Each structure stands twice: as structure tokens, then as C-alpha cells.
Image (cartoon, rainbow, N blue to C red; front, side):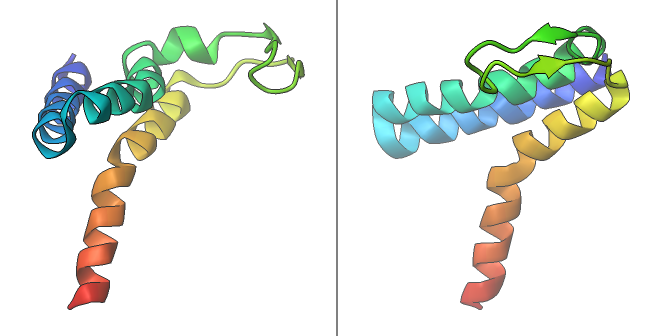
Length: 95
């Protein structure tokens, strides 16, 4: 439950920053970016339990075994924090 609240706050801050920094188009792009990491964090067990055809997403390959939900959530957190990580690296390089 804590993970959902914290990720929701981070996502809300991203959305606010996108809107204030670039308007509606940036907001829509940020929403598109947030879909996968938020799904991985909020529904990690369900997403980790998926097996079957991936369709166009991964070239139609099959997912033949499940993934641990905690690893799916970890991947979601890494994706969610990519903008922060890139920002920190850019700030450090600029100094």
C-alpha cells in the first residue's frame, strides 16, 4: 500500500511538472510514459504472473514462465525514477 501512495505522489509531481513546463502536449506524453511503470508497481503480481503471447509488444514472442512480483515492482520503480536519475546525472556533469 505504501508503494502505491509513494509512486502516486511521484507520478503526480511528474504530471504537474510536465504541465507547468510544457503544457498539454507534455502532460499527455508524461501520462504515456507513466503507464508502464505505474502498472508494474501497482499490479506487480498480476503482471509477473502473465504468460502467453505478447502480440505486437515484443514481436509476438511467447512469455513461457512467470516473474516474481517483487522484481516486476523493482523494474517499475527503476522506470519511474529514470527522469530523476537522468536529472541528477545531468546536474552532476554540469557542475
